Image (tube, rainbow, N blue to C red; front, top):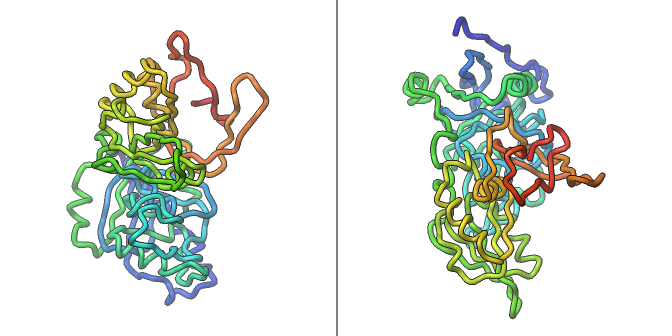
Length: 350
């Protein structure tokens, strides 16, 4: 593979208006990609090294939602916006499983990669700093990385696996000498799905019931359905939802390769023989496509932002959508009787 390529630490770390003694950590760390590239930085958050798939998201805000999104399971999340943490982390209600401001009950990303960490935060609803939250959840982070250079490398070469190695962490050598972890090689859906059915009631008598197949469902999906007057029956990824009573079925978002969840595909295939409406979001769309006879494939670097443009096929109408997925449906593999409804305006993918 040759000598490693070493990218310099981001100059923004030295030129920041925050003095160096206010930075959260002096611990040296680096992000190592499988192609040999190294990015030097400083550690923050939990004192542990980690391996996974390195991805980037281009949203300016929303790091609590992104970090808790189950679709990031097994991934080292790079945020391209240069200043992170200045509005802290929202207060959490332990008695509310659908906490606004979060997409699940815990951080799902393996690690956080950023350019500048704000040591101070200010927001009316904040209860802790970003770093304190990461420490509580056992999630490491690295700052001082030139995230633009890293994003360009991932964009130009495709998503890469990597290791975040923190010099003082007790597991550094073990992680450094172990194979790169790849979430696409295992069934990560089973790791983030609920384990038994959960009924969320909207409080309206006679409300429609939507069966939500939880492949890593974001809590905002449940909140949105409840706000629209629907009861939501949330069931595990491999649950026989065909036998459940309900007015419609929604296949949720989730992490990883859809081909690693064949049990869900089999259930969907049986559901397609019925007359009940069936919809899919993100991974759910890919699972529905596999059940119908389409093929799926891995995107070079995925779609991860709040401003992905989607065009309705055959029209000039375009919607700006929030997306987070690394796989897509192969539109050229459409079986008889099926066709694409929407495509991404940037690359034509589904």
